[in-house]
Amino acid sequence: MQSSLIGKIEKAKRYAQERERITFSDLTVTFRGDHDDYTLTYSKDRRWHCSCDFFRGWDVCSHTMALQKILEGMLSKEAATTPPLTP
Image (cartoon, rainbow, N blue to C red):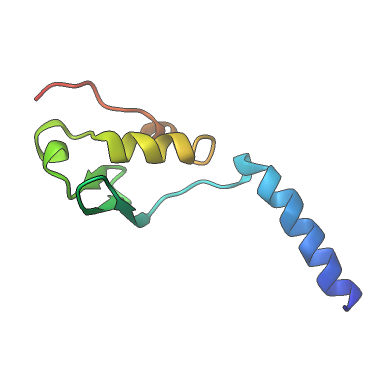
């Protein structure tokens, strides 16, 4: 293996451990829930959206909260904050 590639692999490992280097600004994922697959997005307008029924009424759901936990340290302050629960 070439030494330049070895250096890149080592750098990638270090970067993977330094999660604070990463900030998401635009993201789309498919979340396999218990009952269906849901599309979650975080867009440049700094808002979460989920295709599940619960999100439509509350602007938050178990899927968005799970992603906030998974991406902890890599989200902006706004993206990491769950809105107050007011239907």
